[in-house]
Image: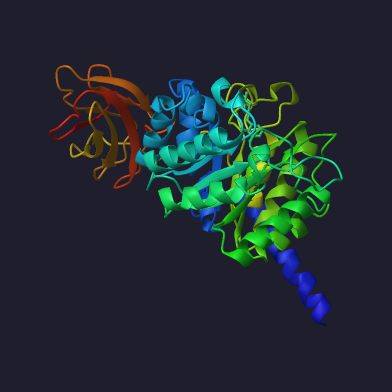
Length: 445
Ligand code: XIL
């Protein structure tokens, strides 16, 4: 009897899911970020600063993702190219833009054997240890209060069956370099969650066992650590492990959060989609798996572009893997590139059609990020423009979720011109000089 009931219930759930898939209810989340949020998680992506001016790229970024990881901009070679001289420009661009859009930031990565500036590669012993501590302190202090989670140490264990630390200049400064990095990061930014991040640790194996033992030891001795990141770069040589969920769970059971931090899965079509769905399912099954980040937006953005491992194709169209992930997250399966359900058409007998705009400004010496909320009046909008007064000497350098801006006039992007009556949408822009002051002017078009 119970078995029949379970089967009936399962049937009902499947039927309901099928209905949602055919005709998404107004309540089904239609973006990765919104769907993940309903599961209490973030859905993030790696971001490259130089691509932010590409409107297809930034459009998908703003629409779909609730967390960002700078792909290269926070690494040691980028942030301290000369010893003691810090360069935060591109990373700041990513961070300020993310914050203005309400996206979390994963900092990546404070201490790592790779992508070191050559001056650090050439240091050893106490000089290197001191340089590392100073680097962690300066970078974590610069971003204090802005980072949700830091990858404090990246890839410190060797591949293969040894369970040993990876040999590196940092490792040769002494086995305690990892805990020193964590304690230093905690002192510099006490609110950020501090993670250890690695690859080939996604399943249970000698390498993940060694990381597990280190984390357990850190917890026992009070070394500050809050999370473990699993990079999850999967392909034929390194497939999604069957015990992925169990491995995430055993780390979570040590009393910290786990995250999928650099997910990409080489392949295409239904096979790739199914593997993506399985990876997402594993995270959702682990209560303390609180976020998933994919390592890039379009296949062409990937560090492994030839393996087409991401959720959007080179033109920015969602792939089957996108739909599979969205469905797994409980979202609707309409793809954002399909036509937006039409809102009631504006009627000429309603002259009250219009909109209002409000701004929220984040300004610092020499620059600003402005987020603008466009709210429709009593009639749905089919398009809008917003004008702001850019002070003389200031310049708008980047716009997202809208077009234009150089002269202070912004027009809706292709995907957010339609706004239901009383509904709203947001766009943003960034610039140099003093921030625009004064009320923005919204016009329906
Ligand atoms: C990669 C970037 O994607 C590339 O652009 C760069 O050339 C090399 O680094 N593990 C990590 C990431 O922690 O920082 C790496 O990112 C991919 C592997």
